[in-house]
Length: 149
Image 1 (cartoon, helix red, strand yellow):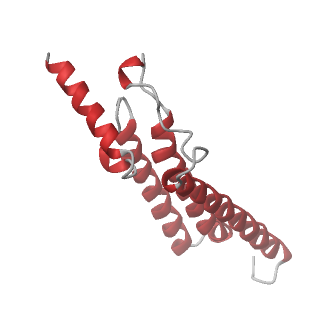
Image 2: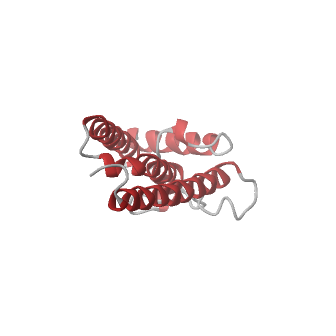
């Protein structure tokens, strides 16, 4: 297929539109995650756990979802949108290499992100916003003291 074939042009247009849509969705998700992390209103902080950690039977999921999963999902959507226009060229070596590298990077980032939140009562302190870090540090110390006793 050449550049002037209508099939190739329509594939390129579809891939470009899909890429733009994914970048827009990822950007919206990223802005939502930023608002939830930095916002001072009660609406932006609805995800913060109010009950003490000792009252949970299993791992609380709200904070890891907002602080890790939502930003990673937004970043993945932006990445997918950025590489989406390359899909019509996937048969060419350079495009396949870029797609493979982007996919490998995404998988690696997701593994690192999920390893930081899986099976944890309190996620690593550096993931918390500065306004929530002292409270979670105190809870972590209480859990460690209770485990030692």
